[in-house]
Image 1 (tube, rainbow, N blue to C red):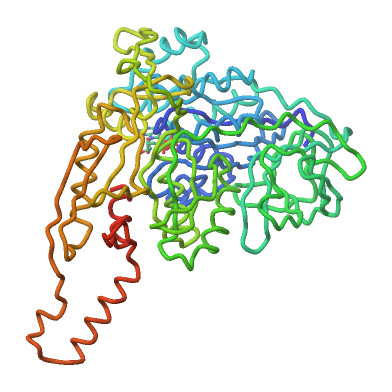
Image 2 (image 1 turned 30 degrees about the vertical axis):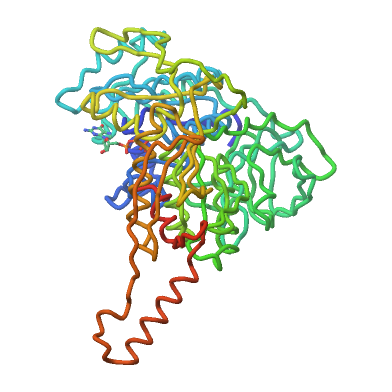
Length: 556
Ligand code: GTP
C-alpha cells in the first residue's frame, strides 16, 4: 500500500451518539468482520466496556477498501466519549490525519461534541461531520446541521446524514474519508520513526506496543532502539489490528499497527516514545503531555499478603492506562498501599473494576478527594466561593452553552448525576482545569475519646464540615463494637467539637448464648473473639477493628 492510499482516522462524538455502532458498520460493509449479532461493538474488548456499554480504551482496526478501482488501507482508531477519557482521545488523534465527528440527530451538539471538535481542530485534522440516528422519530438533522454551522463554521452541505444502526449512507462516509482526509505525509525511504501511541501487557508475549509509522519501515529481526530508555531490542513480530492482531511481513511509513520486541518490563514501553533503527537515530516525536489527575484515592489490598500481587497488577494496568498516577502510601489501619490519581470518578471506578475483572484483585478504595494547595496562615478568610458564570452562548433557540468556574471538589463526586436528573437527562457536561483558587477550607479531625484517628482526617469546605462530621461520627458508631467503657466519637475543627456520637459501654459476651453448655463450642467462640482482636488497632484505649475503617472509608 503506497502512502497515498492510506487514511488514518478516528471517530469522535459525545457519549452514546453512536461511535461504536458506526465503527461496527464500517468494519462490516468492508468485510473486515462478519455481519453477525455477536459482533456488536467489536472494538469494545474489555469486559468493563461491554458491561457499562461505554468505550474506555481506544482500539484500532485496519480496513481494506476498494473505491473506484483503487485499493485503500483505512486505519480506524476508536476513541472513548466520556468526559473522563478525553486523554485517550487526544492520544488517538496524534496518529490520525482526520476525524469523523458524529452528532446524534435528536440530541444535537452536546458538551463532548464541542470538546472533541476542538481537540481535532487544534490538531489541524480534517473533520467530516456526520449526523447519526436519522431513523429516529424525533430526528431533526436540519436543526443539527445549523448548530454545526453556527458553532464550528462547517457549511451545512458538508454534513452526511446517516443511520449507523440501519446502515443508511454509511458507504458515503467511507467515500468522504477517502476524499477529505489527506494521506499521512511520510516516506518509506526515510529512516524508521515509529510513535508508540498505546501499549498493552500480554501474559505470554510481554508488552504489545501500538505504533504509528511516521517514516521508514519495520520487520521481524530489525534491531530497534527506544528514544526514551535508549534500550535496544530485536523485533519479534509486527502486524496490523483487524481488530485482532494479525501478523504481517512488514509495516511501512503511514501505517498503524503493533509490535512485539521482547519488552518484558512494563516500564519499557512508554506511551509517546519514539522507536528508531539501531545506529540510525532520528529526532524523537514530541510525545504526549502527561495527563493531569483530578481525583485521588487510597488503594490497599484487602489482605496484606496480596500486596506484591496487587503491585504487579497495578504496574500492568497502568501500562495500559498511563493516565493513572501511582504513589506508595501507607496507613496504620489499612497497611501498605498506594495513593492513586485519576482523571475523574468514572475513571476511578472503571480502573477499580478492571483490576477486579482482569487481574482478579480485591482492593479497598478510600473515599476520593481532590488536590488542594494549602497555604498555612491565620488569614484564610476569603468569602465562600460558589460557581461563577463566565460565558453563555445560544447554540439555537432550544439549547444554550454555559461556562462556569467551579471548585473541583463540588463537581467531582455527584455533580454530573445531579445535573442529569435536574434536566431530565437533557443537559450535558464537560470540564477542564482552571487552576487553583483560594477557598475557605479547613482540616477536620475525628476523635475517639479525645485521640485523633489519622485515617479519617479530611480537608473540607467550611460549609460542609458540620454535615460530613455528623455523617462520619454516625457511621463510626455503627462500625465500632461496644467496649468495656463508653466511647465519645467526635468531629473537631482545631479545638472546636462540631459533632458527637456516644457509643455505650458493653462487654460483648460471646458465650452468653451457650447457657454454659457445650465446652467445645465455648472454646471455639472464645478463639474467634481472640482472632478478631488481632485485626484491631488501638487508638488511645479504644480498639477499632480494621473492618470498621474499611466500612467508614469505603465509598458506598
Ligand atoms: P461510547 O462508546 O460509550 O462512547 O458510546 P458510542 O458513541 O460508541 O455509542 P454506541 O455506538 O454505543 O451507541 C449508543 C446507542 O445508540 C446504542 O444503544 C445504539 O444502538 C444506538 N444507536 C447507534 N446508532 C444508531 C442509529 O443510527 N439509530 C438508532 N435508532 N440508534 C442508534
